[in-house]
Image (tube, rainbow, N blue to C red; front, side):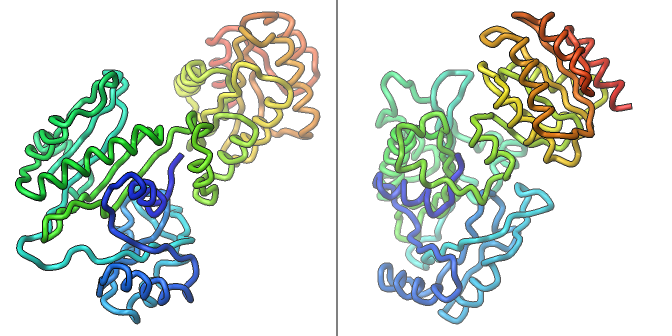
Amino acid sequence: MNIHEYQAKEILKSYGVRIQEGIVVDKLEDATSAAEALKAQTGTGWFVVKAQIHAGGRGKGGGVKLAKNMDEVNERVSQILGMQLITHQTGPEGKKVNKVLISEDVYYPGDSEPKEYYLSILLDRGRACNVIMASTEGGMDIEEVAEHSPEKIIKEWIDPRVGLQDFQARKIAFMLGLSGQALKEMVKFIQSLYKAYVETDSSMFEINPVLKTSDDKILAVDAKVNLDDNALYRHKDLAVLRDISEEDPLEVEASENDLNYVKLDGNVGCMVNGAGLAMATMDIIKLSGGEPANFLDVGGGANAKTVEAGFRIILQDPNVKAILINIFGGIVRCDRVANGVVEAYKNIGEINVPIIVRLQGTNAEEGAAIINNSGLKVFSAVLLKDAAKLVSEVLK
């Protein structure tokens, strides 16, 4: 589950991570009072107004602007709030900005120049442990750094049996070229950040940039946090941070029906039980000359209710020209799924796209007979190659 920058910073702050302070507003008339409160709190004279959307690249898209006085704060907020912000992560349709974060200016003059770093924590599934990634090239797209200057990316793997060790935090700080007070600050920053990552059951923390201020403070100027959906039952206080206005409406509807759904750009909708089988089904669609329109896993206990919900979600995509249902009857019986398909078809009413149902496993033959004798515009298959052939035919 993605959350906004201001929400991520509040989590970090609760774990002792120094952040760029800010106040979030969703109405223009609150901008001045928020800026005045922030000035009283931090002493800042300049402000940074940031769009709050679930996407990166906000600055390049015009979603981050500097304000040097109160009048400019109002001007910048009016420019950003309500805009359709387009970045390289939003796609051409962009995202509407419903909230802005008014933040303090932390790039103030001093004894040394401010310096930006990159820092992230994520799970390395290949090594079955967390990895801390850091770079002196903060503020840039880490993908560009990885492609053009991979030697500038520092990686430190953390043994889950013992956790982050002090020497590892110091090692990262040394490799970033820090010394003196800045090094001590970075070590503390890394330790606090890692504790927050582990205790919130997150799948990714990305702080870009981490700033060394002109007086050697280390703080998070931006924060991108992804919480593990599967662990939210342990964190009711974090689950409420979900902003469904930032999510695809079909994905929201799917989650309400306990379906795992991800919308794609293709023309063949697919409904499958099991993530691995869903990936194989998407491959079959591709090899048949189509493009998968979605990833949809109805789970091991597929029934008439989940099948109908899946149908309704897939059919809301106008690009779908055919639907492939691929069910392996292990836990669930294929005849029960077939009855669910027929019942869902009748409940929804007229469906103008062909449906291919491939059933394999327990009572597969009985399930195929139910489909074939239904009198509906549904084609049954037993083998994957048969399903692929039918997909190819109906698309033509």
